[in-house]
Length: 552
Ligand SMILES: Cc1ncc(C[n+]2csc(CCOP(=O)(O)OP(=O)(O)O)c2C)c(N)n1
Ligand SMILES: [Mg+2]
Image (cartoon, rainbow, N blue to C red; front, top):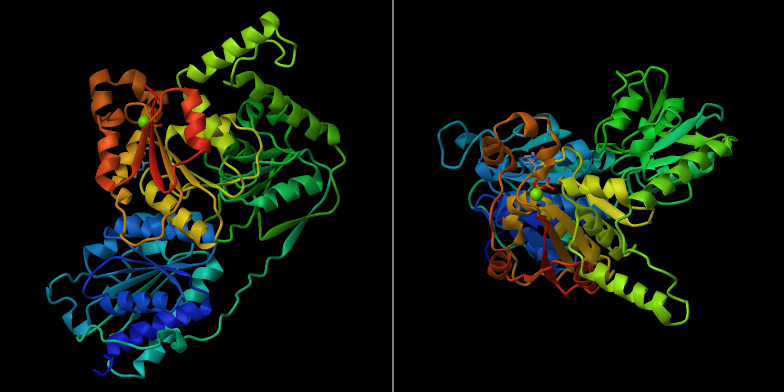
C-alpha cells in the first residue's frame, strides 16, 4: 500500500476530530483540490460515524447544510473545492450568519506558493465571506505528519466557535499534491465528544407594566413557556416555534394597530427575530414601550429601538403578572378575528340532526366546499392542518408565509423558514436538509415545503436527486400565482407602467411542472380543489413529490 500523503492524512484527522466533537453531517460537492476531505468523509460514513450528502451545485450544498444544521441544532460541515465553488456558498453563509445557524465551511485551496500567480482556479479565499463568518482559519498546506496536529487544532477551534456562537466559520484548507491517498480506520483518529454550554445570565422580569411577549423567527418554545410563566399575551409569528398554547395571539397584526390593544402596551419582551409584520418594529420603536430583547443564541440582535432596549441572555419570571384580564382580552379578540376571516368549509345545519332537509343541505354544502377552487387562505390552512409534531413545515419567503402568519391558529409544530435575510433562494435545498436530518433521527414525519412559483424556480436545481441517498418524505407544494405577486401590494404596482411592472418585477413564467418533476424523477400532482388538496397532503406519496396548486 502507498504511504498516506500529508494532504490525505491531515484531511482525515481534521474530519475525524470534528466527528469526535459531535459532527453528524457533511455535505460535499465534487472537486479536485478538496478530494482528501471528500474521501475522508466517505470513509467516515462507511465506518458509521457520520452522514455524507453529495450535491453537485455548491449553492444547493450550502443551503442543504443550512437545513441540516437548523433541524439538528449542531454544526454541519460543507466541503468545496477552490475558486468559484467557494463563492457559491455565499448566499447560504449570509443566511446562516443572520439567522444564527452554525456551519463549518471547509474550503479547499491552493498552497501559498500558487496563490497570486494566476494559477488555475485560484483566488483569494480567506475572508471571501466578509463579516458573515465568525472566524476565518487559513491553514497552510500540510507538509508532514506533524501538520496533522495543526489540522486537528483548527478543527477544534472552528467547532468551538461555530457551536458556541451559532455562526458559520471558514476553515480554508490548503493542500499540495499528492492531493489524497488511502487512509485506513479514520474514525480511530478522532477524540471523544466534548460539550460546549453557553452561560446565560437571566434578567428578572417584575410584574406591573402591561406586557406582551413577542416570538419572532426561531424564538423557540422558551418564548411560549415564558409567556405562560408571566401570564402575558404571546404574539407569535408562524415560524417562531412558539405559535401555540393558551397565551397565543395569532391575529396580532390588527390588534397591534388597535389603540385599545397595541396602544396600551407598556413593555415588550422579544424572543427571536420578528420579520413578518411592520407592526412589531413600529411597536418597539415607540418611546413609551420598554423593550427587553432576549439574546440570540447566534444571529444578530433585532433592535429597532435605537439601542434603548435591554439586551439579555435570558429572562426569568418573578411571578405571574396579575393582570389576567389583559391577557384574556387579547386572546379572545384574536380568536374572534381569526374565526371571522376563516375560509373554511361553509357550515349548513347540524350534521347530527336526524335525516331530512337539513342533512341534505349539509351534505350538499360540504361537497361544494370540497370542489371549491383553492385560495391562498385555504392553501395555508390545509398545510397547517396536515402538519403534526413529527412533521416539519418549511416556508419560503413568498407571500404565502405572510398569509399563513395572518391566518393560522395555535399548534405545536416545528416550522422553519430562512428569515435571516428572507431570500427566495435555497428553499428546496434547505427543506431537503431538514428532511434528511429528520430521517436521521428515525422519525417517520413528512417535511412539507410551501413556496411560491418564483421561489421554486429559483431553486429548481435542488430537485436533482443523488443516487443511493436514503429516501426522505418530502412534499414540495408550489402555489403558482403567475410570478412574484408579493409585489402587487407595493406602491410601485400602482405607479409603474403595468407592462414594465410585469416584465421587471412580477416576472411570471410558464413552466410545465409535470415535465420538471419527471425530469428529476419526482412524483407530481396538479391539484385544483380543496378535497383533492386535503387528500394529497394527508396521504403524501412516499418519497419526494411536487404538488402544483394553480392560484391564478
Ligand atoms: C434571492 C432573492 N432574490 C430576490 C428577492 C426579492 N423577492 C422577494 S419576494 C419575490 C417574489 C417571490 O415570488 P413567489 O415565490 O412566486 O411568491 P409570491 O410572492 O408570488 O407568493 C422576490 C423576487 C429575494 N427576497 N431573494
Ligand atoms: Mg408567485
